[in-house]
Length: 140
Length: 186
Image 1 (tube, chains in turn purple, red):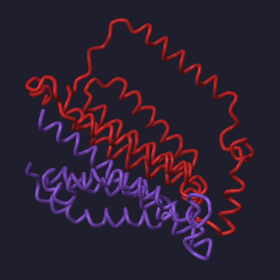
Image 2 (image 1 turned 135 degrees about the vertical axis):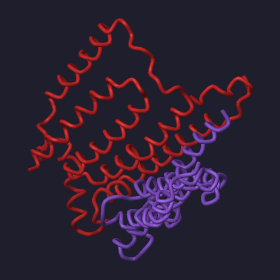
Image 3 (image 1 turned 120 degrees about the vertical axis):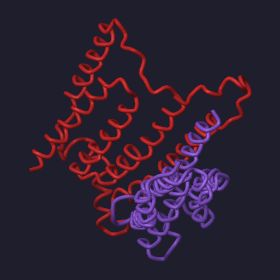
């Protein structure tokens, strides 16, 4: 699939900014709109846009299929294990206050940890679904 | 000004909905539903629900449009011809629509602050958020802090859904090994 040179160069210029915006939405989720879910979808959208213009094979060189499919459960594990330290310290599961002496900072760290789990699962799931659809279309 | 914006957006939403219902080509339906999602995202911004608007724009208009187009590539992209007997479907949709409207009569008026849903746990969320003990964005605080267990369940739901789709589409096709070829590709 050969596309217009303007489209290819334009997309190449856009990609880092899309990723930057996704990371901004992720890390700034405590203060601004957004969070792990939105950031995950946006970063998956970056890979999908790259795949649409440059082909899925080149997209799979950036985000290999085996890695994407392993990241889907890894995010859930990150989320679930973010609550374990509090449990071992004798507090409730998913109590964030143990991450720092200052409760606000503890909450921020905790939220960041679980949102990391969310962004990993969401981005990987969206990309995996996209790959699955595209591969099915090729083999059929 | 807000009334004007709402009126324009909701009129456009209605137009797009009618266009989707009248459209026979599924490619057109997918594109129109992408437009619908963008309009819906604008409506959500007017309602000050920026988090939801962001999700609607990225998932509804972005990824699901691409996925639906990929689905069209796998299946046929023309809808079946119109059924002759439209009386029963018309009755069912009018009945269900009327029932939904009837159900909304008992709801509290739009935007009232003392509706039951705003008096249960919400005041505590807001006052605690102002005390700066949690993340200042209350939506994030509610999602990842107060209702952390729910969000963990949601993440597990996304995981389950994704694994299900991947298994369905990529699972080994044992039956009809030769017949699946040429099924799609319209």
